[in-house]
Image 1 (cartoon, rainbow, N blue to C red):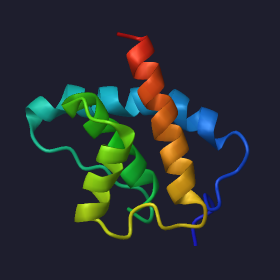
Image 2 (cartoon, one colour):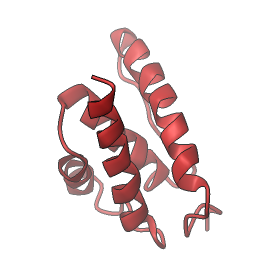
Image 3 (cartoon, rainbow, N blue to C red):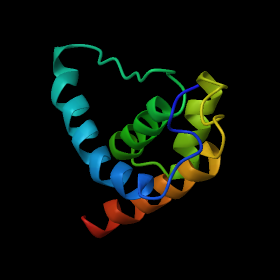
Image 4 (cartoon, rainbow, N blue to C red):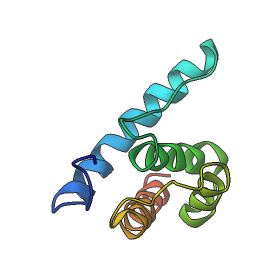
Length: 101
């Protein structure tokens, strides 16, 4: 079991501070070919980064991005507390994106 479930106090702010860096890395390197996004388990943190990247690149909502991820990776966001945590993080990330336009 990974040590990131359930999410702990401070995890939301940490994720919000790191998502722009991850997305920047991904988008900067897509021109060279596919970019692999993966964490230890490949389901919750990975899905969070993938959803945020989809939101940014496709201009879609947090809920739509999560649904896309779950459709192709049904075990995404299934660790204890991660479905609500990811929704919360991605909703806040979405608000920040609109603020930064």
